[in-house]
Length: 73
Image 1 (cartoon, rainbow, N blue to C red):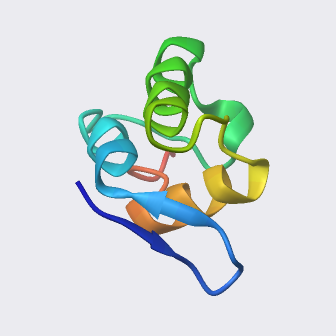
Image 2 (image 1 turned 30 degrees about the vertical axis):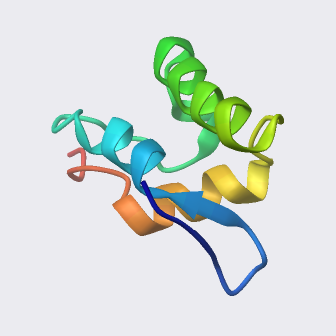
């Protein structure tokens, strides 16, 4: 599992990105759009490796890295 620091200073990683990318039909332009069960899995990754929850900026950067999903009409 790899983690890296973004230009904004956030830390994002492969495991949280993999969780987001499991959902092909997602449309999550903002962290508030992430369903609670998915967010809990992402938080668990941060808890395991950093003993903390991801910041809002980290969630934004993670979504920017993965993309929000397909556009909705």
